[in-house]
Image (tube, rainbow, N blue to C red; front, side, top):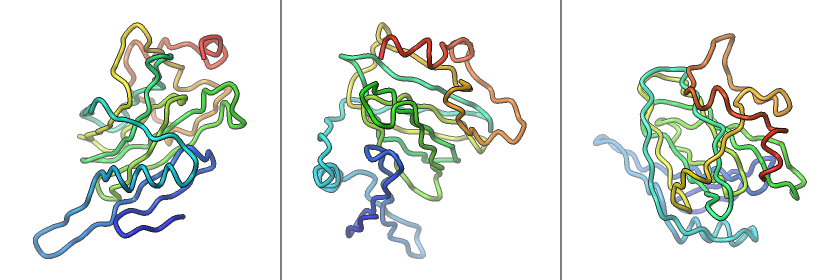
Length: 194
């Protein structure tokens, strides 16, 4: 764990996936935080030998109920996207899967709880599939991307793929998924395009 004045960084089992924990300044009025600081973010990546992203788009989703599952999504090159994700209302279990064929962690995943109360942000570089499930009603999810959305290059992997064996924190419940996500290819079916 690396500490800085305004942000601490938590490393995960996949080195490129980082959790950013902003410092919260609180008083009787409420709180303040820097949700993004380009200098701090870039320094943390540079210090680890990772490329510096350039963000081009911000996205915001709202899920009405607990148990909404979105993913696993990614875009093919040359439109692959890195994502800096966070929750401003509610809570999610956020998952990134390594789909880089030449990676020593290919096919492995990391899950992180992101919530309005823990203020964490999750950095997911290009080369990872991404998804999340809402753990509370009325959850708002925001993320910056390093490339624009391109429908032609958009792909997905079945959220409950047996080979990936992702723990979605379902506790026996059935998630609410879109029609598109419900018929996504398996990890093995998707590999040919990675």
